[in-house]
Length: 220
Image (cartoon, rainbow, N blue to C red; front, side, top):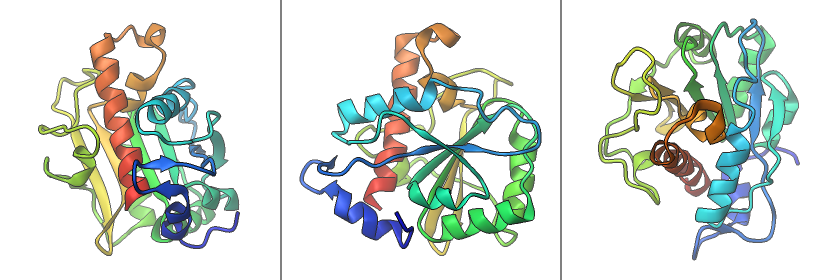
């Protein structure tokens, strides 16, 4: 599918009456990057999020997420790409150019700090958008108030450094193009319960916030 403007594609997919992707399944992807960081860290996260969204939002997302490299033209096939890991992230110049075109053309990047990625992702995203800085989104931002209301912003899923969770965004020409959950670790909360032994209540909060992100993207 040639990537023109995601708003056009998603309009064709979304059934406005009940937010169901009624006739055509859409696919989302995990972003593979270089630098040695474990981009593959949470293998059950996206499949579980997809199942939750399909069951609770009425979406028809392909149950098998794709894996796509930052610099690949295939990235333009996916309205949402997810990036996570614990360590170094390095984008080539081609990656930087490709990711900027993707995000300014209607794509969406969700970064989930799996603990240790912060300094690297901030450095690389500054190369993608030299003119932008991550800004903390206020608690009344629509991404926190889709099907599920998070009146205090992001839920705290994993302790990490014990800091309050923060939701940061990159806003390009008035449009949120990248959402970054920091000191929260939504991706870990989406994983199979046996992986991290999180309580069901904690996993539910993580999945609900993930569903909000998906619904926000599909209705913008």
